[in-house]
Length: 434
Ligand SMILES: Cc1cc2nc3c(=O)[nH]c(=O)nc-3n(C[C@H](O)[C@H](O)[C@H](O)COP(=O)(O)OP(=O)(O)OC[C@H]3O[C@@H](n4cnc5c(N)ncnc54)[C@H](O)[C@@H]3O)c2cc1C
Image (cartoon, rainbow, N blue to C red; front, side, top):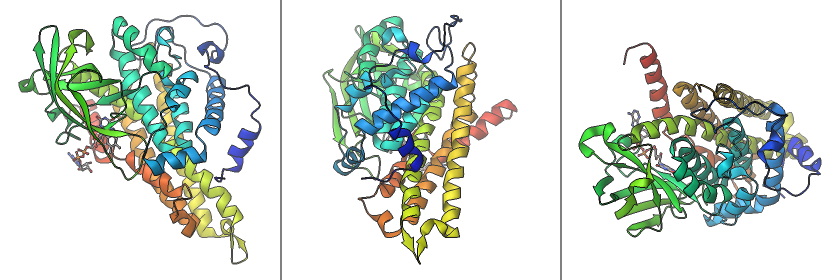
């Protein structure tokens, strides 16, 4: 049995709920609320969830994870480097795949705080299942929700929110990671659409995805203004996954190198307009960074889950490890880092949900939330290993996996260095020194 924290154990034991079913949005909305004007970042009729709504959602997610993402599932996903594909339908049935999407297309329309809650608890059970979940529900589904036409949403979102179809987003290339706008993939206009040519690298869910949001240059000489986002159906001739990548962590969150060899994409699959790719990408990145920061929160909680019971049970020198002040110091640091990161992430998510009529999305806050949480999560993973001593170094315990998984969040969705740069530039913009 994997060690779990006393808190988590109590929460799980109290759980007497009926089997999880797809949860109607109404179940989370206290009373009847007025429809407000359309938000550009939330589905129509969005009302921010109450604390009770979010607590209920968290309990449901913990129950789901306890049943579907057991310690053995998390361990074998990591060990075999294979995503448990039956998980998609289960996540869909639970309603988790469209947290920020419109109810008309199978979403729950609950906003970004809710999305953070679900990603946090899924990542607590398995970092890699959490990451694949986020690539689907945030990078793909939310980008379609934000930028898709009604017709595109009707066509793509129901399959994605039910879990029948898997989603991904492809912007990075071998030579265009941090400097993503220098990408070389092209989209050349042809009869009725565009022909895509190029390679994409490190794409989460790439080997499995049915629908992929792909960025390509429609006008390679126009710099950032020449980029366009497309929705690509992976069954289109010319598309292939050259290889599935072998990784340090996040194993089982399948990552691929994708090839586009004259892949025809109809004009109806342009997302956000020709030449508007950079706007779609940058706005998406803000919200992506915010939501992904909750993956780091889940991993910090997982580090505490594995460490707290262990140091209270194991005795050395005749006393539990936890009575040693060096160990107490590590526990205090881990706990404080989790609490501070959590407060940061949820305050930003709450501000965006609550300002939904005219959403205020501050680049420095979204980048700051993940910058802080990601680095703290790696530290917590390292501390968990240290607190467990020799057992911390054994793969039969979760500590090593948590640390390996946590490191990814310092790299994906822009590295820590790029996040610092983005935050600095946001202030330069505000002070007119750009
Ligand atoms: C597991 C995994 C999943 C991923 N999933 C996706 C996905 O689903 N979709 C997608 O499009 N991409 C994905 N990525 C790609 C990811 O976004 C890039 O790896 C990331 O942006 C960094 O780019 P790079 O690897 O080319 O590093 P580089 O840009 O080569 O950077 C190398 C180092 O140099 C630093 N550096 C670069 N430029 C500067 C600068 N100007 N100032 C200071 N330091 C700098 C970086 O911070 C880093 O430390 C994924 C990556 C991984 C590892």
